Image 1 (cartoon, rainbow, N blue to C red):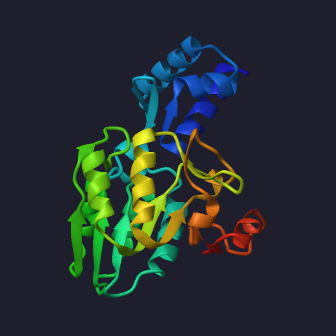
Image 2: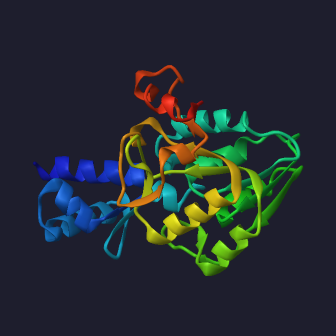
Length: 247
């Protein structure tokens, strides 16, 4: 594989999953970690990614307020429009972080009267702009890579609430492995969020369907709604629709 092809693959994986590890890329591309590190250094120098210890981050995820940087922005807006259909007045809603969730927050109608809990300071700031929304930020240690609060303090706070709906993004979703992620701390927070909710909606752009990350969050049957940018009748969603309600 040519260097240009290899680096294009790396950028695609980073855009899809927000964060990648050098060791995983080395295995996927069948090259040495030194080669991957050189690729990541070049991509970071050109401003296409953010290099961190052991891997790299997506610029769109790290700087979500820079609109031009957001990957698959139109798809995420379509997902946001569908998610809002699940919301109504007087609901208690628990939400995660990520660029799709920020699109949801920006699209909320001013008339909506809800209470939102979130582990994401960035999402909390967006939600606070809505005039009839109450926002409760669940505090803890801030992850520099995922921009959500995590740790025992967060888990304890989540165990004390009960919400009508939990809305989460995902780094991987498949029929066999369910929802998966690549960050241990994020997985623990997402598991606690699931336990706090009567129903759960998972948002995923079509490109993330049938992808698997290293750590499991939950089986597919723990999810009530799957919200994608595809039409519900799409062939890619046929098998998913047997397990969850597809929007």
